[in-house]
Length: 64
Image (cartoon, rainbow, N blue to C red):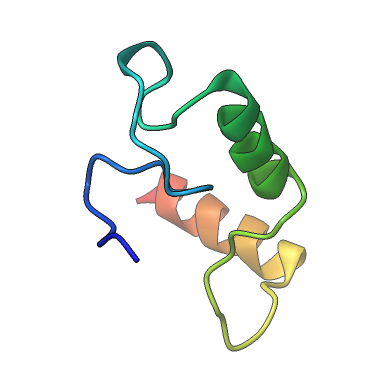
């Protein structure tokens, strides 16, 4: 099997096409966009932020 390089599409592994970079096609770019919109790409966290605490924190920051 061929070694994956920076010039390979991150979705399917085919060579990158300049017009669709960093993907090989519009199809793979759309698949990637769908993953972003669907929440597939997330960073692990310990807990969900409390919206009220966030508002309080922002208000404190703008007072200083």
